[in-house]
Image (tube, rainbow, N blue to C red; front, side, top):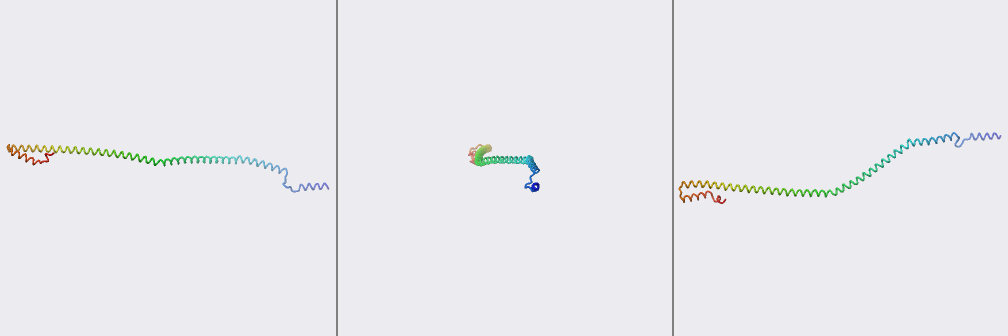
Length: 186
């Protein structure tokens, strides 16, 4: 009986459902599965995670470079802005200086043109005075010629009328009347 009980206990223990059903095969499978997971993790890490990390590192570097470049561009833009603002402040002074120079040149040009005009006017007046003097001399020469012609005519009349002084004085007076007083005044 005791043998039977013992068999029943063994049979009951063998037949009883176990809580986890742990046996040697299951433990071996679990250990192999854990090893396989670690191997898979390392293989996936090498083939997937490392390239992903490298890509993220490249992207981080690229973003950092772009941020640095943007900061440099901003600094450059700020300096350019300051330069342009300084130039804008100076532009009024430069414009005033340019206008002042233009005014000076205009005044110099004006005085030069006036001097040339005065010189031209003086030359024209001198030329007119010389021409008037020449015309005056020409008129005087014409009068002298007329006097000579009249004197010759008078001499011819005197010779033809004989030498009578009363007739001669009358002829001279007639000739003088014909010539007029304006001839002798010039």
